Image 1 (cartoon, rainbow, N blue to C red):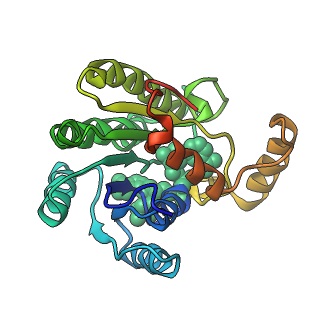
Image 2: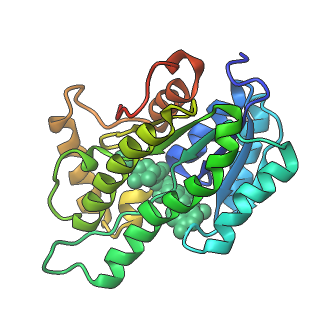
Length: 245
Ligand code: NDP
């Protein structure tokens, strides 16, 4: 398939979960990928899966989204290799558990830095390139950006901020031909919940609960989010901007 033939696509958080699945899917549709993460071994796994899916060898970049110099490198290295950027998928994100009574400012800062500030910085740096190509941005937000869920206060705030960012930047860049959208998944099976401090027993209860709260009666799979990202990034969504899917 050639939906993204010769399109240069950056995916952050491509070493795991939704980002890894999105990178493989977009590459299998012809995209030339820059895959970004901190864990180089897992980044290489994604690169191997891209090749196995028939995609072109991706540019693998180790970067910490919380470090400004690392984020700058993502745009510089991609343009140095391909001379352009067509799609930016802002996917890297973290979750910290806690309420107003027990979320420290340190936790709040960590979540906001990765989920919002880094997205702001990378988007700001990539925008001149996206304007040249009339490209587009897909932000990976969450149902937590739309509704309030207990016990993940900083995460809820960060995703609500990301949704406002999507709408605002969509308005700002529309006249320049750049679309900006987000996917807002419900519960998807990845490492994020345990990384955020959920123990195994609580995680199993959480998955069970998700079967009763989603109309389809089950949690989602990373591939199902990857196809939604690909739709928004493709020309099939050419009249879609400022939308949370
Ligand atoms: P994972 O924990 O599996 O993946 C998170 C990814 O983000 C990893 O590749 C990780 O890279 C990267 N990342 C996190 N912090 C940094 C950082 N400081 N610098 C560089 N990379 C970083 O979780 P998911 O796949 O679930 O999460 C992806 C996105 O999907 C997030 O934005 C999340 O909020 C969102 N989401 C997830 C849902 C779910 O239920 N799973 C539901 C709704 C939204 P590395 O490991 O290399 O550090």
